[in-house]
Length: 88
Image (cartoon, rainbow, N blue to C red; front, side):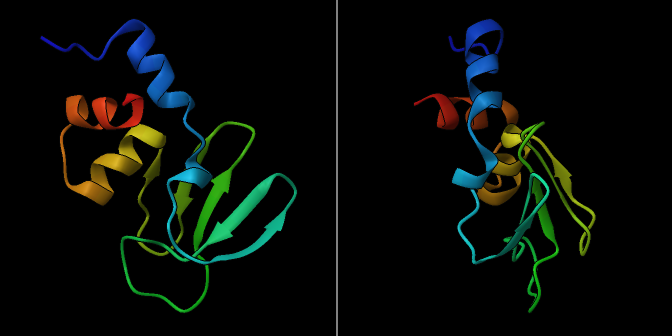
């Protein structure tokens, strides 16, 4: 049985969010990268990746968190499967 604790959880959270965003990068400034959000249609980049903390927030749809949450939302999967996805 797979459990998302300890090393697996830490490794999953460490995956760079910029590697998970599969849309157009629209800019960078002060440790932040801007992208078109994968979760809703838009023409300007409202998804911000904060490189220092490896977190993200979309100012368009107000979603955001860490790499695990991004995979959960993009792939519509649960926490355990998101950790498996990120550590495989």
